Image 1 (cartoon, rainbow over the protein chains, first blue to last red):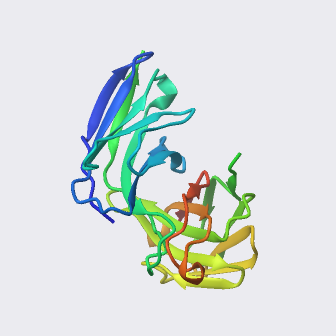
Image 2: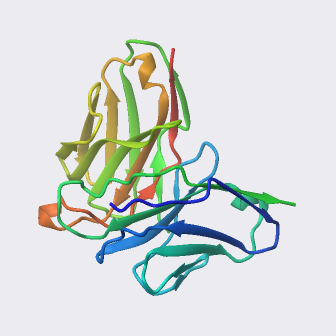
Image 3: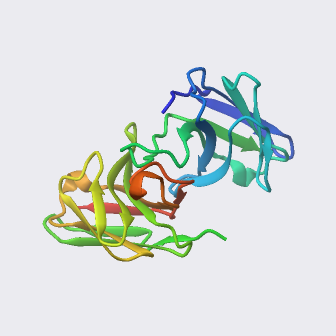
Length: 115
Length: 119
């Protein structure tokens, strides 16, 4: 899987949009951009994923640049419960191989939402 | 709604005890995974199962075994718990991959985790 780079920490005011960047300059054509988050002492929670088009669901929006070398996760109205570590991962989907699709989390971005 | 449950959120065991961690998913997923997560080491894959009674070793299988008798249930067994197995244990599931089920599958969904302490 391609390597990703994220800022170690970010702050956001409650009610404002949180924009979390991720660089993945070595992404391959068949690799998707995935976002998970992990609230302290809980299991990782899947947020969203995309290939090249922008994606939106009930939790967030994912904006992927045209060259696919970077992306931004947007939480449109951050709340205190969004305080967590956010992980950006690039991985293939439904592909062959022997890695079984194991996930590898980097250091992620610690997002702190302030009142 | 996606649901992966784990039998315990917190568990304290003594060295040498046999420990069972249970994971159940209700999404009819073929793939199930056991990871452990430690500070500074990230996620590490212990075992993977792509079908009932089928299993593959991950990166750190030593000291662990697994059982998958039913599609929805995947158990992790610590044969003789040791202090270096104190960790957060995470179960995940996904749809099957290609290549006879052994390839990279779909989105992985995680359970809440079990924080195991071995004294």
